[in-house]
Length: 92
Ligand SMILES: [Zn+2]
Image 1 (cartoon, rainbow, N blue to C red):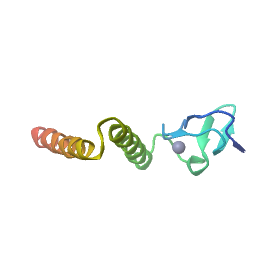
Image 2: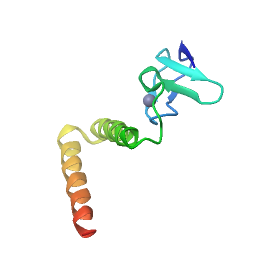
Image 3: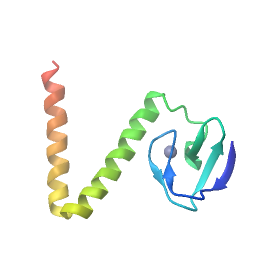
């Protein structure tokens, strides 16, 4: 795995989060590009799946804020949480 600066913006192969052009990344032919903090992380470990979900959630919230404004994005986040708890309850 080589450490380098990204020539292009892209997506991390480990956690699925995005990185910007010029960001410090690790790269190898077999794996592709990953965040420098994702080097050596097993993409299939439960911890990383949890972490990836967090990143994806964070990115979605940012996008929602940009589109709908802070107040409505906040409402969406609450609704989201409600829905996931509700689903969780239903499984029982
Ligand atoms: Zn990553």
